[in-house]
Image 1 (cartoon, helix red, strand yellow):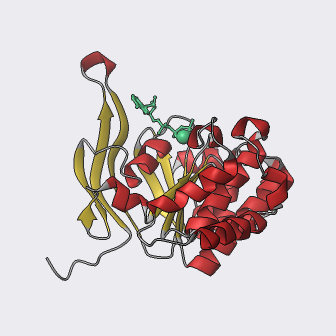
Image 2 (cartoon, helix red, strand yellow; image 1 turned 90 degrees about the vertical axis):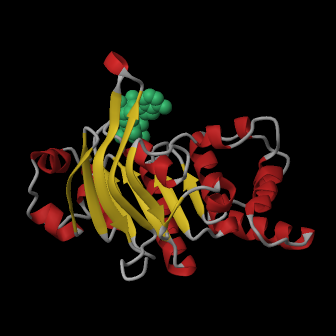
Length: 262
Ligand SMILES: Nc1ncnc2c1ncn2[C@@H]1O[C@H](COP(=O)(O)OP(=O)(O)OP(=O)(O)O)[C@@H](O)[C@H]1O
Ligand SMILES: [Mg+2]
């Protein structure tokens, strides 16, 4: 079917329902949106509003209950192929690494997902380069296991993996949740650097509309599974239409207010 324009994601009337009958949860409720190539969008909303479920659908981890969910014009059928292009940084970095293997070996193994085969030397070089990109000296993690690092350090390991793999699309679900303000600013800067250098599309998920304002081209506001508002950051901040957006604006931590000109 030609003529309909194809984006990184085209999501039409998508719902995701868990459970049945009385135990039913409508996690995502009739959401329609697109994410353009090389765009950074933010999905903002309170706890339990469906952000992570939507993110997992973008990763091909959950099928939708209804509606149409397309990646570059086609449904996500082959997860492995999908993950060679679409990668994630999640809230809990420990869950993304196996506790029984060293960090370095897992960073190296991550290259297995790529279609091209790299030589051993190339893999070692790309791992070093990625560690340096997130301000970690390769020697500092040599021989270390995930449990030997802090939450913030592990989040940086996840970002290092992204730098190493250079995916086309990054789904970043609260990647700054476990780190202090200074490291948070660094991580955001890394994300911007990734976008600049790799021409990456980024879906950034957060509770904090201040962070969203700082990083994104467009902001999507979610509440109870529904998309209640979307628009450009200035428009959303200066002229919020939904009471849920107003609430999120009131909830911005002081540390992030500096970014907002109201
Ligand atoms: N695998 C699952 N099975 C059943 N219900 C689920 C599942 N995953 C999520 N839910 C429910 O779907 C709703 C949305 O969850 P989701 O994790 O997307 O929230 P969120 O917006 O990411 O919240 P937070 O900001 O706290 O991470 C919640 O009510 C949650 O309990
Ligand atoms: Mg979540």
